[in-house]
Length: 627
Image 1 (cartoon, helix red, strand yellow):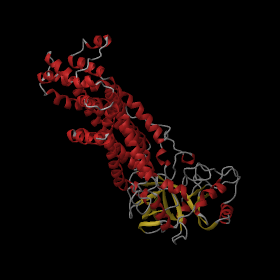
Image 2 (cartoon, helix red, strand yellow; image 1 turned 30 degrees about the horizontal axis):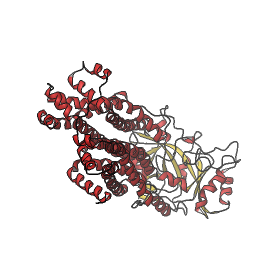
Image 3 (cartoon, helix red, strand yellow; image 1 turned 180 degrees about the vertical axis):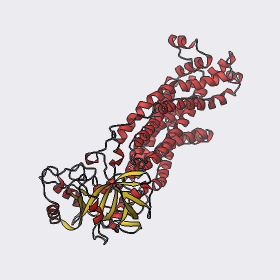
């Protein structure tokens, strides 16, 4: 029989004999590959809804801000393309001169505007929010005509709200709002391809956004968009809030919009005109899905690390069960290489199955979370599952399995045939320091500390897995603390669709991490109980009660879990800071962090007691007789 066929038959038989362990390993790797697949397949799914919105509104290729730099247009690429826009120095050209310059520029084929824009304070039902109010004619524009989703277009005394902004405010057609104290009837809601939606009209923070978390008005730093008639917009102007104007341009080559914006909006020029190409607006319109990817990327890393720890614990526990099998393979002529191949093959097969399952689940779930939000029309469609994504997910699954299995497999392959067949109990390594530290402790702690000393690598894996879990939980708490501080409504709370979507993703990620942590804790406790079955039986024969033995196995998990949980708190806060690119991170309340640490340690102790109780049911005499 060939080696490959032999290894295949042994793998199939082992999976049949131990289906529970195979399922646990499959679930661990599937969880990490699912999170990774979601993050990868979401790439670019918002392009179709934006293009549909752009076609429905005949969106502009470039939006220029004339006469100043309002909060309205800020994009992701710096000066000239909507970044911290340069304000004109000195008198500068007039709005009419700017219009003439741009509309007669090479490559411009059409335009609409300029439309007046006023900054105002909007109030409704106890909520106060900033609003950029654009004045429009009642007749539809040939270029950049917002698509009315509900109600009608602007009329005197009426206001149309950008749909995302309206949903955040909780208002609909027929409600009344005030702008700088003047009452307006909400006559409609609309979407546009010429402006990022609420709350990303000032995305990213910086430049003219003026995010100042220390002031009482910081909630008004993220404006929403509204449309009124031109006379109503002009009436909102004041000495402290002068009008600015928007000019929508169509180019002969839409792909050249970034170059056009850089040419006329370059901060180094004598009279720069802040402007934003449609490509930047498309990126910002997809911020909901981009934020999901931003959450899922570190989540996939944490899930992958937890999966490695879980698979390593499972592999180590199975080595203890496979000792005689390894001896039998060697006794009938199996080489160390064949032994290692048999041990690796099973985990590789399960890793491939987990990769396929993770890709399928991620591909099926992605459309459910890929909605671009109320700012766009249309659906993103089914995400593409490309060859590169498939290769990356499969490679990660194999890396997880191999990283956790190679060392135990090599160690098992190097075991002598005689010792493997004997499968005798290993003499514990007990240093004088350990004996002095443990001899005066209560029996559960004494036995638990010595169990930790028997398998130091397993204790390190337990500490690492708990640290990873608490890192994720602390990052979630830091997100909530920071998001609450940056609430955009004042004095009422104005909902933030980006934060709401992030919370959904973090909830999913938290469930995955907690599930993996539970799986790891149970597997680690099971491996510890299996490895210490003879020592536990001997302790019971010498007078220890089953309850003390169960407590000892739990203590063997709690002792390394405590420092891991404490270490995870600062790691989680730092992870949130790095992943979110936020300079000022709000540290969660101390009681919340202490609750996470204490709750995690208690949960580990409770979970560890389950396999310990199962093992304690076996009479000590039977275990010692088998020895």
